[in-house]
Amino acid sequence: MFWVATGGKGDYLWSLVAKGIANGNTLAKQAKISACEQGKEGPDKNEHVVCIYNDNFLDKDQVFESERTIRSLGIKCQLQYKPDVFTYLGVYRKNPWNLRPTIYNSNFDVIRNQSIIEEVHGRF
Image (cartoon, rainbow, N blue to C red; front, side):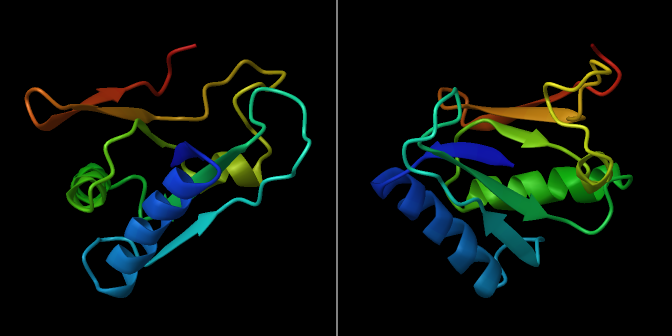
């Protein structure tokens, strides 16, 4: 998943994801973008979250291949990998148990033209 501002940039990045999936250029078969409530207060106002799904979060090779195919679409912003099980259980970033719901972070190094993936599961 990644966050993007509303407006032109958000529309552009979403179009890359949607076209990539429709054309079979990603390992993912589905994705979604959140709605944005105008006038909403807080740190997430005027931002969308884009969620891109793969089949098995336990298959590390599949997760990393999904990341690679997302990057190949031109997505260079920070990506975070959150298994859906956390969403189903209501575990979000500011939860009462202080659990970290993401298991990988991926940042793109434009100088080296490569992703830097960090495993974060289990760190609080």
